[in-house]
Length: 268
Length: 246
Image (cartoon, rainbow over all chains, first blue to last red; front, top):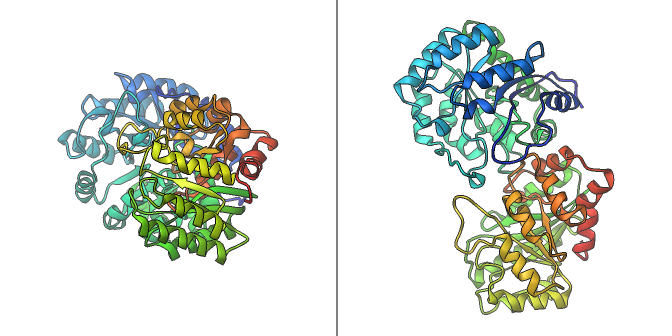
């Protein structure tokens, strides 16, 4: 294993209502991450997706991760008191990013309340994490979240080119379609958890949008951690490109915007 | 080293697919790949001939790496002749059935009977979907029906049936059915589920490359809490037992 610093920007804790998840404790995640050379993570609560008050899920998550190297990603519903929740999360949980689920919570990305949310987190230098899906749509059970509408996403990205937005679980075909907007965006990223539909998917994503727009994210423990780890580790990318994906880009993503020019990576 | 029992050449992309598969074999720990051709959902005889010809050509180009499965459309009047050509003339060691018919359609029966005589396995695409189910897309119940009718047939249900928590228990009672983990899913717990219902002797490694990443399937097995003996079964021993000549 190379000794690159590794950060998982898309890891989870909590209960997934639709199937048994093995090794779902926070201690299991830390153990498995460590075995794969991952020392830090951006962790979100699965429970917060489904709770009426997502802050209840955030309180549970905080009890797990406080004092660890994991940064809490606050799940909010822009239709209901999101800014208030974020302020609470900043003050009580030191949240490092905000995560939204338009497909589960029933709104459009161009809803004015999402704009309010974006302004609020932008003033506080918090990135927006946007999962395009959690499970493969073919396996949805009981709940069928509204699938991502790529035209809507294109509109969303085109009016927010300077915001820090991380698209999670994006497939290669979707990256191909979105690549002009991703490349144009100063701080628009995708994670690796959706790069699975072809051989050499990570390399192809780098060809499409450059290594500077890709973050390592596993969607673990919902998905197999080593699948995404191996996809980067055994890729034919240069050590510099791998390093950018493992952690350098995450450092840029987390930095306030004015520091971008000092941290920006030259790989893409 | 790994025997990948499920990979494809796609119609119109033969050379690019071959190149990618060979590159993957050089880059990853792959010993052998079982390849079949795929194209349209209901291929005609010309397309079937083209798919199998290109697969045979790949076998000849890479004799140490590639083994061929014969793609068939049971609706075609010459399906049995295509099977004979694939096995007897081209040296293919299995059959691939996709979505032209359900696998328990009577049109399939003569092909299964011939495969039993040849002593070769049949790789059955199977997917239980909550959205996008194709009209003739096999599910585990279809596989179970076929397995019950032909207990001497060797059947491989692909993709762990798609939704393994839903599908594997359906085929579990039929010892002549194994399943491969190929495809673009890499959910944690799926391998555990497969071992629970089938045992490690009935799970085969597959990737579905080049249309899926080999590495996500590899990572699934590496992630699972398996003994080295169980991993060896999944990676190669089961394939050697079930796919003669691999």
